[in-house]
Every structure is written in structure tokens, then in C-alpha cells.
Image (cartoon, rainbow, N blue to C red; front, side, top):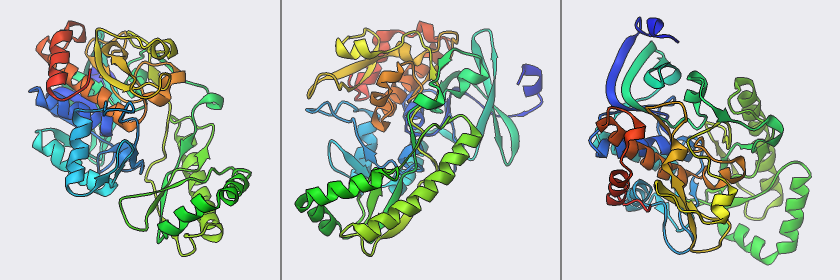
Length: 406
């Protein structure tokens, strides 16, 4: 959409920082920017925030630790601590969370930080000229509207701004993209009996898993914060382009079919599941990979293998190449598209190689990049909106003061 077209639309708000996407990366970005004194608008397509952690039922937070200490501190720890106060989170380093409790806490969290949350609004385009985003276009039951800002953060997971603004990005072909998942839960499970069966009958359990795999399933269950409730992330739909409406529809429909088959498999074959039944499927398919921006730096395999340090680090993730007690740094440049002056990205669409995406896309790490992006965006506002003028010492000082591990 060009400037002439956008001027005919109503402007909802004009703020310092606009965050596109209300998943955990987006919420972290919005809160971080607000805490640095910026006025913030957060746009989310659903009627709740949290993304995969709520609507996707990805209620197991991993990659929080390097094996010795929590490395996804700051806002990630803050939210987990809030959930623990109401017994809606448990465990460490794998943290179980209650998705319904998280929805409510995110409403409170954004309200407390003075963020203008705009729900039920899908961002569909942008006004981009001379390396600067001026506004985004949203569409809802109220029609098309404009949100203007000084600095923008793309937390869509799909780097939608890269498409709107014709920025460079990478994307794997369908045949090599990571599979999608439809997460689901079952209830009325005798968890003690099921766990005892798995411990005492390992050979039988392995045989059941082999049988399921011949039908395209990968049986795996874990208990949740709710008694008798178990979490399942054991079915995959391959070859899905997560930016294609038709592919997403196919994945959702196929995923629901597979959940019916798998829930019956458990009830018929798994001790402890005799009276269990399907409780819920996620309201959105779990997409692991779509577009990744080409930023001012592309974090790669060698960086992790060599334990490379970066003067512009904004946070850490666990390092799979060097065992316990080791983490790797994420540079700010991975959050900065090459041809945009007032745009940052956060979450799984930052600038990294395909081969290491699994260590970036976990929810706690997305929150780390979100906090880094939000803090940087607020500082960029003080520099006229230009991300190239961010003072790294000031940014890192602000992040450390907010509890982040640099």
C-alpha cells in the first residue's frame, strides 16, 4: 500500500514503538520498550497474547538454562515468576506453564506497563519509503486502519515486514523446512500408572512407539500443571509453507485427523490411558520455520562452535556444541534488517542460518531477542528513530539493569 492510499484510512494511534505480533517475543519487546519510557502499541491477530505459548499450547519452556544457571533472565524470568506465584508454573530447567493463566497474566502485564494493546487486528501491509517504515496497515472487523510510529519491531515470526518492504530474507524450500506440529492435550489420565509402565516395561513401550512410527506418529507425552492432564507434541505435518494459507489449512486439517488417531491409540494401547480422552487441540498450528531476515550479521554454526563473543550482544541462548555451562551470544545486528533504518525483528525470524534455528526459536530465547529489540527500539527513538545510532554501552547497561544476561 502506498502513502496516498494509506492517508485515506483512519489512524488508530501514533506512538514511539510499534510491535507487530503479540507472541512472547512481541510481548517482551513491548514491555522492554515501555520500561525505557517509550509509548508502545502492540498489534495481535488473535484475541489474546502469548502466541505458541498460549494458542499453540507449547506449554513446556525449554532452553532456559545452560545446564548450570538460568540464561533467559530478565522478562522471561519475570513472567515465569509471576506464574509461579499462582502455582501456574513449575519445574526447572524445563518449565511447565498453564496457558490459560499465562493469557491472563499477559493482559495484566501489558496493562501495568502502559502498553496500548490492539487485539483482533491482522497487520497486512506497511508504508515504507527511503529505508524507513512510517506506518503499518491493520485489518479487522472495524475495517482497514493505520498505526504510525517512530520505530517498528517485527515479532510476527514470519518476517512479514520483509515481504511488505521488499527486504532481503531467506526461506527454506518446502522439502527441507522444519515440520509443523499440532499440539494437543488429553485428560483423565492415570499418570502414575502410565509412568510406571514406561519405567518397568521399556521394551514394550519401545515396541509401541515403533508401531506408531510406522503410521507416521512419534508417541511422546508429559504431565502438565493440571492433575490427570498430559501434553502431547508427537505428530508432525511435513512440507508446509507457513506463509501459505492453503498449506496452513492442510496442516491444521491433517493435524486434527492425526490427533483423533493418536488419542485413540493411547486409550487402546497405553496403560494409564484407558479412560483418557482428547481434551483440546491448539488453536493454531505450530510453525517452526518460515522467513528469516538477512540482517547486518548472520549468526551461524561456526559462531556457536567457536564460542564467538560479540561486542553488540543483547542476550544468550544455550550452546548445543559445548555441553553444560556454555551459552552463546546473540548480536544486535541479527535483529537489524540490512536496508531498513527504523526496523528491528525479534523471535524466530532473526538473521541466523537454517542449521542453528532450533537453538533460536524456543520460546524463552524468543523472549530474549524480544527484550533486546524492545530496549534497542526505545533507545533508537531517542536518536530520531535510527537504529544505527544506538549506543551499545547504553543498550547493554539498560538490559543488564533489567536483569538480562549479556
